[in-house]
Length: 410
Image (tube, rainbow, N blue to C red; front, side, top):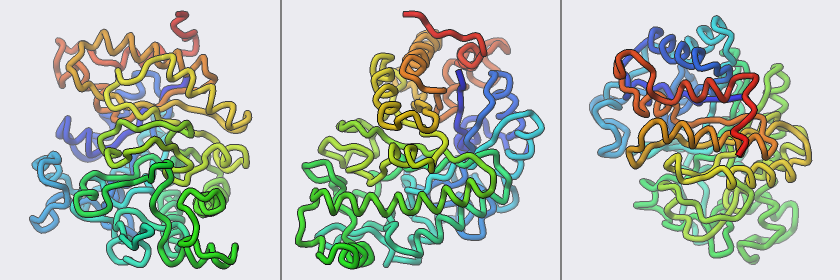
């Protein structure tokens, strides 16, 4: 079974303190030794680029001593993180190719901030692009895909990242809301029907009036025509993004939330007080994208925080539901976070993650994708710990990724 691990270099830097090209070699050596062949490599950390972008500001933790992260968000390590003189994406693609790994450009294009005190350059300098509620409250960290400037900027960033010649692109529509923003912005993300409260910015309303001859202000927020229209704005963007990525000869993945209604337990979705789903809560209909052939791989994340928040039967049911919605088009990958919130021993995590992979396999998923891969290493395996013996989860991933792995056979 295929095992993907995402890499956010800043997180590994916080854990290891290593820097420059040797740090990329160290990460990818560990990945390769575990039999993993695909690595989505993070290109944007909320408000800042993790490569030498010309379109967005490059990550520099101190920024003249002011800092951009909220107090307590790994402050000292973040302040030491400075990418102005070194481009990790360039080295990741180069070193990955030398090792026979597929390195993807993982672009979280749905967030303009990440528990940070600042937002992206695009959002900061274009308040007319901010999404708005019916009451006219704007959110600077959420942009309207009905605005041509937003679509053009996001496509230009994809083009900029494609210039690095990654093996694939993963567009992230999962990360979206940030609790830090809700301290001074609308504190509710969805209404009681589970539909996003956003989409009332002038550009969106004008586009709806031009197509339907009505003002959405006169409709219920959950009116099916109004919901479908807001969904169509993201789908139209995906048509352009797919043409761009596929035109470059690359595969396109998307990281998404479930289309099954649920109350999400994630800390940064605390503002979602009502059950919702990817389509109603984010206007992201990834099943349609798959059916239309726009995406090659749907990476469906399970909304777990701690690894043990989910179990194999739930993974199996989610995978079955997703495959049915996709109607046989594209690959399905089940994603999950690898956090240890309760200091469980590594052997318990090893048994659990193999069972989760088995659930994904039984449900028809082609593979699993692990977020926060530095935790795969850190779980029971500090640097130099264990008498140079690997006591984390890499050996478990190697077993799952082996061609002859047949599951757990529960």
